[in-house]
Image 1 (cartoon, helix red, strand yellow):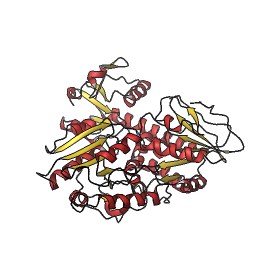
Image 2 (spheres, rainbow, N blue to C red):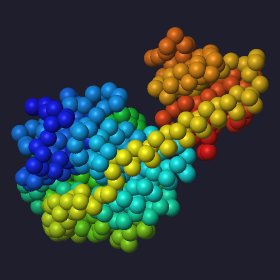
Image 3 (tube, rainbow, N blue to C red):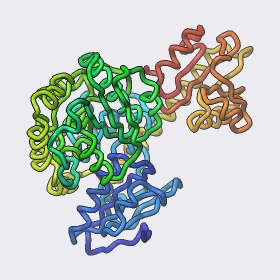
Image 4 (cartoon, rainbow, N blue to C red):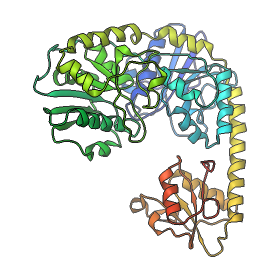
Length: 498
């Protein structure tokens, strides 16, 4: 695929750049690359997509009018600094926008309930500074959503946003081969989605609900389509003997369509994945999800959804006035009432009405943003200055309060954030004695500093600073079980407000 220069555009067209270099196949690259391809078919736009040389979107963009800008993890990364463009990027990448022309416009996408917590983690700021950024985004109408669940999750921060939707779309797939049950003596279910922390517990909850409602029943085959770093959670999960998990790995669209047609009577999924079944006429059920184990025996057929909803947290369902069903009611519909063809057609009709074309939605969002790069950069500079100031002040106060003359200074986390802290402390003439990390066996030493397991920690011997990308309550619990006291024996960098 031809790689284009990132500073030359056709001045007779409006230039739009999609900025989401990502190496893993997931709903995000699919959604944005679909928008890029669609927009590139309009002769008024010159469309670019920023991607790694082995990025997830490259194959999808091959043989299209979208031009590729090769991305490198260089700082700063610049895009068309001599001319005005429109930049489209996920809101949780709000801390890593490339350098642009001061008058270029920025449009954010929120496609997940965790987008704003992820943005806060990236900014490493407190709630007040986060709200400063959100207020600017709201004021400039510079964000759109895939569905109402994402908008609703963001509203909980106390800043009001206009509901600007660009629904997810997928091409219509060929009809499933059989309108009849795969096997009347079995239950055959497909689940499509990456096996990552925010999706895997949806499947374990599905297993629990099946076990609760269908104890001692016939065989239940669950075809799990997708890969991810949380696969072990599912592979090791305790389940009844009659529940058979079939791990299918990552499949192409054609392979998914074949499996849904030949192996499944129902699809359970969220986001883009649930549309794959509906577009082929398979009964498709939206499954709740969370980043931790939960129990929620409430599901909705796609055709019963509204506001383009394709997923939600278990605590959000009652916000949307959606009819829900237990797993028993859904399986009764398919296997007792023989409604597979009827429900499949209802899901397909809903898909055709709501998820076939989002062009006008996207143009409206694109034309509506008023956020310039200059305004964004001014706000980001202010936030970063406050974060650095607070960062330093918290460390200074902690070291002043801590009687560490006879104790060693330890950093929990030997990754990027931990090594950044080492450098920061060096500038203050403070030396780090060692890291602790749960991956100590793989790391052993980082930047000539030893890496130990957390089990060695002792409040009489050590002072601990935790420096990680996210706030993990189990680390706090472990430290406090060992006798470490917050503020005098340990400090959680960036997340001290927790």
